[in-house]
Image (cartoon, rainbow, N blue to C red):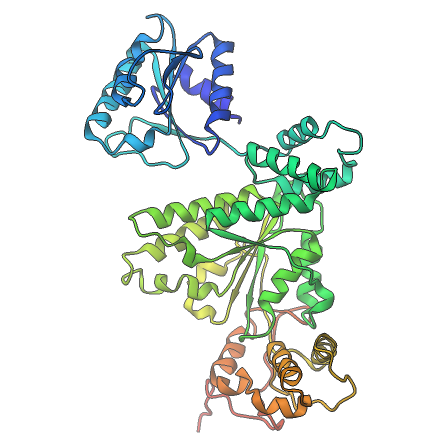
Length: 497
């Protein structure tokens, strides 16, 4: 439902206090003014710079006095006429008890005089005195059809507007931008490329996310060919994401949960998945959501998830998720319940969001998360990413030997307990110190050795509970072994003796 349709219903029902959240107040004012002309309602607007304007004409009064604007609300039209007063960025003045009281009085009186107060603000900051008197409406970001119309209005010269397939890529890159941001990005693309190109729009979108400070946009060049192993996980996610589902939103993919020891390629997989499927990867750093004021953390969490929704189709990556919501494990006693409320908001969004956002969460210790986090219909699957197999290690060695320009025929070290990150570290040190990889391996101690107990316990927990990232089916842990290949007794499963 568009802003005009929602607003028309509320005005006809005589909701005398309406709060519209928007980052485009001028666009919202234009839409409201057009609606008022269609319905023959009297429209006036006020902001601190221009003062009160009725029908586009300024009214002489103190431009900086918000109280004068509220008191003049009933006088902007006839007694039997519906009157709309738009208050732009009025949330800045609601710290004053006098202004709040005057607004309460006007909203209550507006039921009788049919005077509607509309507050335009980028955030919802309603005083408690007005909470029960105001209704909140979102001014949605432009959809694909609106962005396409903007593109067609700007790209008027022959050759500037791409063909249908390329235009879809341009619109994918523009989704999530405001109208003025899209206009600026389209214009910049025409200056740089002489046509509409998605690369310029991705750059502008990355700047937009940087300004918000809530999400980061990753667009790398690595795909699945630069990632050894994980064959079953690769096939599963590619098949889920490349199936057309826009015609039936119930078929949309939800995401995957990845559990593994450190350094096994969880984060690299997520970044490569974006390149493989042509989707942007949004990195959610939960630490950036923390705010100093009461309620600001929850509001920033909702805003970050709303941005992710607006940028669909996309991949949302939450790395080390058990550390991100660590405070929720004790009921939020250490932080006043903030982490518990953040987790609740995130879980609710995972379950209810209707946009094509594929969520990838990674974890090194799923026991720190509540069981409801990984239940069905929040994720399409929970995968265990074990240390790479022999075949995967061979491909990883070949890849990193070529990357660091090392001799591919040299003898390789014993890598029985190594992860992909440790193979890369060995090759990097060999190139850095100008020595064979067998010698540089003496500087690498794998996590499977330094934390053997926790790695074995993680494998035993995942056995029968998680899907296998390398082979189809459920993961089954093999008997733990030492670096020399002999069987080792897992400390998590002592013998009966």
